[in-house]
Image 1 (cartoon, rainbow, N blue to C red):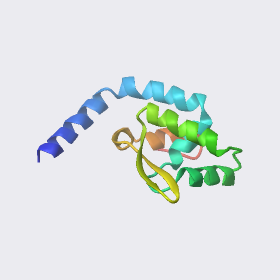
Image 2 (cartoon, helix red, strand yellow):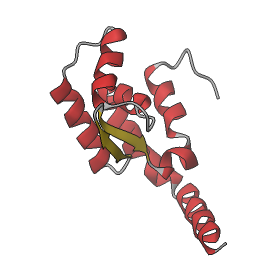
Image 3 (cartoon, helix red, strand yellow):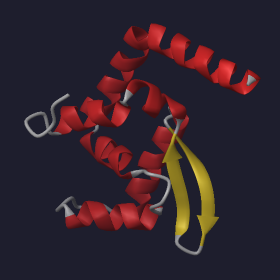
Image 4 (tube, rainbow, N blue to C red):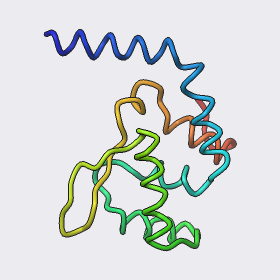
Length: 118
């Protein structure tokens, strides 16, 4: 019960600060489209190697070190976290901020504005 109250309070505080949280993130993703593409592929199930393969399948020329640096940037920005290391590689997921502010929808709109609507 207490944990639910803390999570709710966190959500309220994040939403109240949305106007200060989103603009720097928007700039980050606008300035680095590949970073936005990487962020959209992180779902808690795919490995870093699978992200590389997905990007290549989309016609994006990329190598594992570049994706690794992108994921590190997302971790440094507190947007993703490591959830598992297994034979597939490192598995990352988005943090609660994504769910509260619907960041993936916003990021998708930045890189494909004609395909996404809210």
